[in-house]
Figure 1 (cartoon, rainbow, N blue to C red):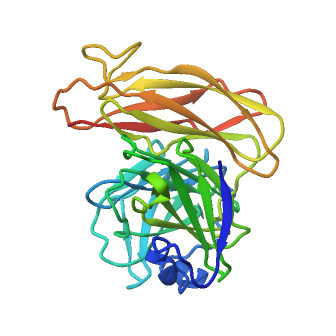
Figure 2: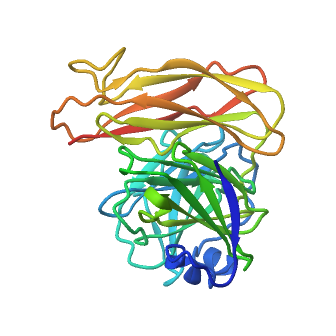
Figure 3: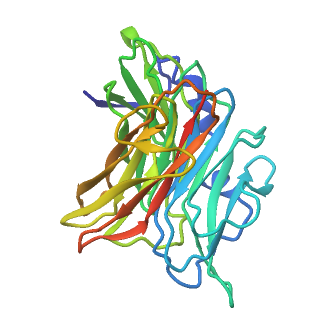
Length: 359
């Protein structure tokens, strides 16, 4: 069950007020202005698509990014700008090689608002700026309540925001979610009611910078808390997307032992049915046909079929079950790869990383 309600002016829902008054004072220019870097059009189009920002639930704010890359991209820089100070820093040390398409950081973030962007370059002998991703802004340290949810937003160089969320353990008494969408144009906020089993939702921003907050609900519809606000900026990307692209990212691919790691397979807007094969590949974590001694996750090797839509990104979620062995091993990782695309599909993001956080 889901419903949409607009909130304008005063609202009786006290849990919504946590940040709406503050968010409503922001503007597109203020958010984008926090990133002090030239976002001029690149020298050539890039086929890379999708730049996802997720805030991971936990005792401290951890920001995780996933993206897909184009074939001409040799290296990238992940930049973070503070809207308050105007300073820009690298969130990943040095350049990011083309085979790395997922990073996470928990660097100190004392300011109210930050904006992240991925900037890509071609390789030697003549490195050239190719373009930048969507700009994703967020408000760290605004999570309330002891909610375990990781909340992610992806734009795919368009106006439709694809939102996903996951938790290793659902809160007791979970009855559903309210997804809060706050357009920074001054239009009324939307309250989108979703059932307790829903884990993703698409929102058409209509080209307006919009902030999203997820509010899990307990018995009687009482708010259990809220995630940090994530604010994608449509229209800022200068890399190009094209129909037929299929990619995979984690949602965000982090899970604790015994829980499920979620991964999203994306098909860009288009027509027809696209298919691709999804396979797990061992890293420091070991796969197996079932959870048993020495097995960290249950291996996956199966096809995914996506009924493409001319106007929206289509998502299929793939679940990888991690195994609880009770051993103190720290974090372990594995890959999830795409292969064998149908004739009407091109794989742009061939793999992503899954991380199992140990006890």
